[in-house]
Image (cartoon, rainbow, N blue to C red; front, side, top):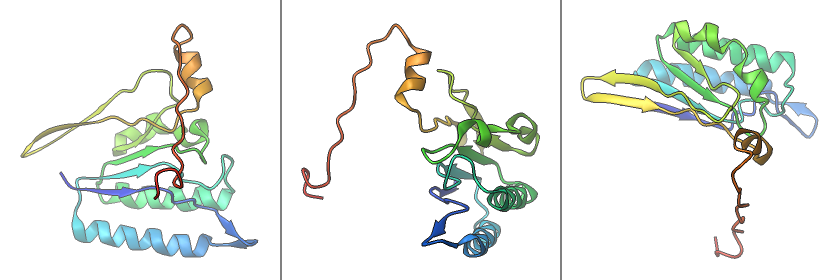
Length: 159
């Protein structure tokens, strides 16, 4: 299967006080044209859709237009939240959008429901696991001992 993979869109970002929303609209329109040319089997949007947990209304409208453009092209779309997104806000309307093959990862509750896809080569399961804070994991498995992960710095590894 062929997918377009996007992440870190940061729709609504401001740089030095200036909005880059018009540039973001242009890029998303370019992605829609690429999708028409490439004819992928789906589009994965892997986190940081917005630049902040409560995005400006204009940013939400831009993302809505982009999702609608993908759905109008009959492309399955898989959206998960990143650390800049509010999972609750991003998941809003997810049940309704399934009818148009736009899948919004729900707020994580300890379970990930895979989405099945199939083509002439076989089947595929898409597991939409969003960015998860340790406090959320603790609520899902309070009896488990959670070990903190050590961050590996780029300096330590010479990267």
